[in-house]
Image 1 (cartoon, rainbow, N blue to C red):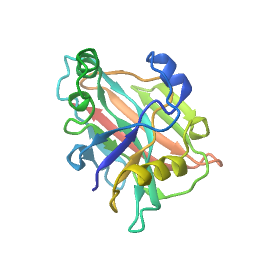
Image 2: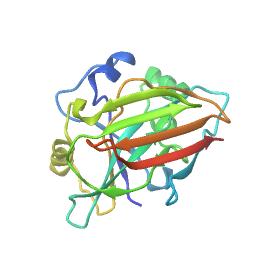
Image 3: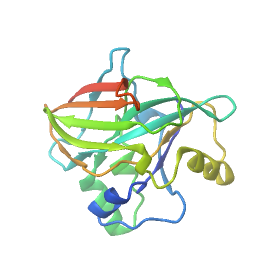
Image 4: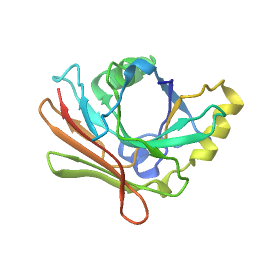
Length: 199
């Protein structure tokens, strides 16, 4: 598992809901390989909150994996688990977001499928309530644009993951919550999924 390159504020409605601005080019924070948690072949996974007494949000995303030629080879649905308490404190101090975004288990991955540049639908529910449900066609910067920018500025490696940003509807999770996420293609077929209990 490689490094996670996480594009943020890549959906207009999400930027608005968190009071953030939109940049003219993609900007990133990083997730170390150790923060990623793979689902099994049936999509079962866990969401490790670490500090259940703090405000921790779900952020559903399209995640893309790079091949040996640094081209997209596979994709899955993912949850960028965000400790909003720690992130907000860091922002207020002008500190990096690492504590709020890259803690152990913060990169929850679903089942992998072959990469396809077509738009997909991302859905996430908590205890049966749909919280996020939008298409990747709403992304400000496409996967191709994100990778082009990354190659211009950074050295990528095979196996690196590209987190493409979350649509609107992020919300809190607590210990014991059941979280279900699905990615559907244009025909409505589920092509990636995960099911997790928060712990």
